[in-house]
Length: 404
Image (cartoon, rainbow, N blue to C red):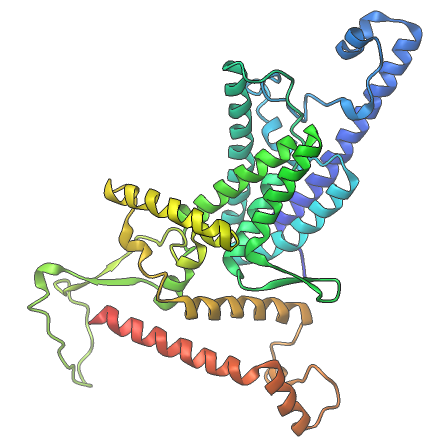
């Protein structure tokens, strides 16, 4: 399948800027080696002047591409907030980031579109780096920072944002490793990434920035998808293309009138039903609640704290508590929608034709009807059809409730 436009730009930028950063660092190292051999003190780096030794290339950084919190003038070079998130100095990290963006980014851009996908990445990159810079600057101002912070060179905020978005789409599915002997539930991927970043930060100071950016990316992505992204609550948007509500003042006077077949239907401006054209913002379902990202022991604590915060915000009308009420009763519909997402992804990978009869082609060649029926029963074809019918019945009932 063709790689979408924004994902292609992101992959090219990640590769090109990472290579450019590598070349500039080793070019600087070569210049320092030559200058130190000639003992030209004017061209020696500040680090070499203080220590008397030429620093290793890994200890150098490119000020025009990256930044150090509390040290780099970000206000005069604002583009470093973007370029620093498109650099990976480790080859293993660069490979993992490249394939993560390739597969997950391609999947999300095909679902969301170019505009929403670009906005999501921009929010994670800019806000995440600004939060890191503000955190270290505040610690330095309060006198709690006694050493120079590491250089910001990692796309961790983007990777974490993709994990949160994938958890929203297919939370109940698994990633299989070592021939299925190790299974990792997709909804726990953000939590595992935060824990692994924290463990690495304890081993080396270089991973402190990755740990902070993983937390920032998780918070930014969840808040954006939970409260602000248009059309994220797809359980409601798939039920009806718009929401129908009734004016309370005319509730008693409303009566259903039967129209004759010969009469032409017309839209009355005095009708007690009116359309809400305000787009749905955020995924307010229970399956995307904050505690669902954590395993059982931690999720209980997170759920208790988040419920307290939710009640306080609802009490002061910061959020609308009624908009979160539909998530508990629509879990079956949500599971069916996630199954449809996986089915679409599988159909694109296998590349079946859209012509009539392509859906009847068996995945195993030269199979008779009896074997095909047994295979469909094992795979779950009947359950899928029954699940679709059940889901449609629930949506019809929900639509009738809206009209009553």
